[in-house]
Structure formats: structure tokens, C-alpha cells
Image (cartoon, rainbow, N blue to C red; front, side, top):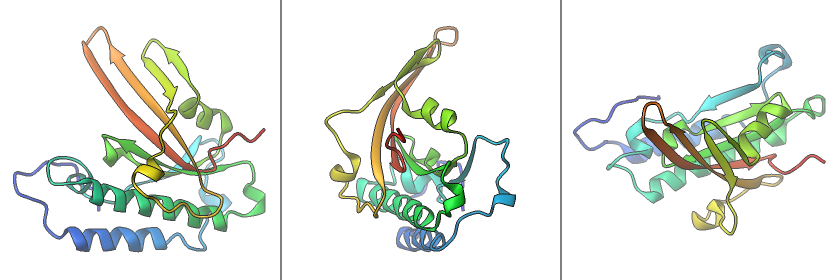
Length: 182
């Protein structure tokens, strides 16, 4: 269950919630969405991380909890990738772990290559900048087990608005089919 609220009380049932997320990720074993469910006009298909906001963000979480949730996203991605039919060779199966805003993390199937590249290639525009993370690996830092065929790519994002005087920054770690198809 996804819930967006920061309560005053400490989140209860963390082990139960982590078991539920593990069941969610295992539910992708031998599953790939059928063609008739994926709209060809759409740019991507996604499943948001199925947790309470306070499980992965805020004062009630820690790196061990975040790592367990990230591992379940990567495991789900590996299952989707293993079940990907030959007819879907033109789509990319990935998941993205967003930090520090981990609640925005998701499992993705990119249906359009240009849309995937718009998220992962270095770029600069009037809204901000995306750069590649070099010299670091979230999978090594968090000791994540990458299934066969799953690669890793990290980008740093900086967004700003001079009109409204705000600035956001973070990292997005993509796992799955993230290497160049060239």
C-alpha cells in the first residue's frame, strides 16, 4: 500500500511491511505484461514502490530498510527481464531507486527508447541538469545482489526554478537494461 503522510508516531510493523514488499517482487516471477495491456502510444509502463512513505523516507527509516526495499525493486526487475518475450526486444526493463526521495522509486518498462535516454543521458536545460555518476556504485555501497542481465547506471539530477526560488537535487540509480543498445 502506498501512503503519502509523515505521521508523528513511529511506523509500526516494519518486518511485516518488508515481507509484503518481498512478496510483491516475487509476484513478478514468470510475468511480463501482455501486449494488449501496454498502450503503444505510451512512453513507459511502471509500478511505483508499494510501500508507506515513512518506510523509505523520513526519520523512521534507515539504510538497512532502504537497502531491503531497493533489493526488492532490483529482484522484481530481474524477474521481469527473465520473463521478457522475444517480441518485446525493443523495450527496456528497468527499475529506478531515487535518493533521497526513495518513495518516487519505481519498476519501469520503457516503450520508447528516446524517453529512456531523456532520463539517463547527461543534459542541461532551463529546468536543471542531469550528469552521470562516476566512481560510485549503489549496488556495491548497499551490497545489492544484481540478477543475471541486470546492469547499473547512476545519474545526478539538479532541478531549479529562478522564478519560484527553489532547488532540488538527488540521485537516480537505474538497474536492468540500462547499457547502450548500440
